Image (cartoon, rainbow, N blue to C red; front, side, top):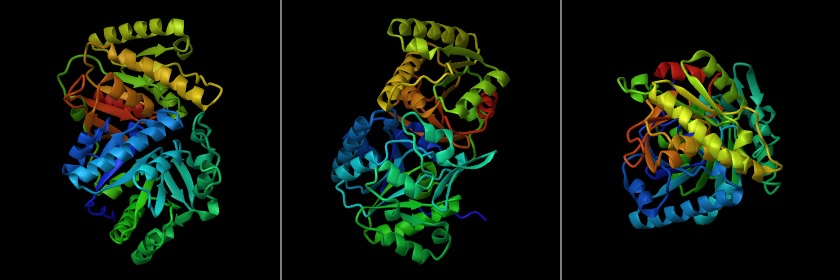
Length: 444
């Protein structure tokens, strides 16, 4: 028997999303790509339980990511003073533990006035097979349950880690500032036991404690949200570092059916559809291979090694842009993708710089298209963020729902290059090997 989500909160929930894939569990919710005070006042004052701010901070060096979080924290504080609407902040990041933690939550706590009783880490994301059991975070797929520290995500060139136990992961990521033994744990037994005792345990957290929340299904998150409501009503103040499933629970947003093909690609429109693939995780490469083998689509590959040669990059971009446009005008679906050999630098900063060059090149190719594609899918968090903001000009979009489990769809705003288009944000680490091909075949 499913448990209904908690009621929507009184304070507005503001979700700072370090890439656009965190919108994968909600619908009917706006997402901003800028954070001016007037825009924040408008969203805080509007109906609805929450809104997203896309920071794309996972694509940037840590200092820049912190600057973004501080700027948003300051602007939110000013907006609250002017409109009088209370808010709570969720720092949404990767369900496989990649991202700028603890730097981003530290920056937020600093600019939001401090005084947080606890920062709660909740990386469960059920649509993607991410669960936390006995303090160990797992990635679940058809092969079984794998501790996160043993997956390809833990070997990420920029955000790699060793620990699967979240208490040990906190110690690792904080450089020992917070010891594993000091991290509070909300267990499944707590969540599934006496609700009063759970609320008492959360109320007992203080003095900037770091806590982790185990979760194996949505009812676990609904339980912690109900307990949080009691603690917050008593004056407790929490900051959150979570994956996407917690946002829907905290905001009281019930699931909706997957979007139909006609809601993403209305029938009768001319031209081909466009898939833009930048992600390098193994799952994306498998999905791309299956897509090209099984779906009605033509590949346009750009060689990353050439993009990284300044004298060659412009020519590669121009040639690819011409190929894509010619195919789209013929009514042919196109998969614009980077070569699959991962090119890395000597350190995290160089890896981010390589990623920026690749993403900038994909953006320039999409920007050069004069014909509107019939539908548009971007694969990978950084890719989808850069295409949305830099190629399409998104400042505010509406999250329509999901095309597949964990795959959000945005409706582009009037300010964009292609107003009203449904834009599919396909995470790099979501879906089975055939998922991308199934979606393209569905859209036709």
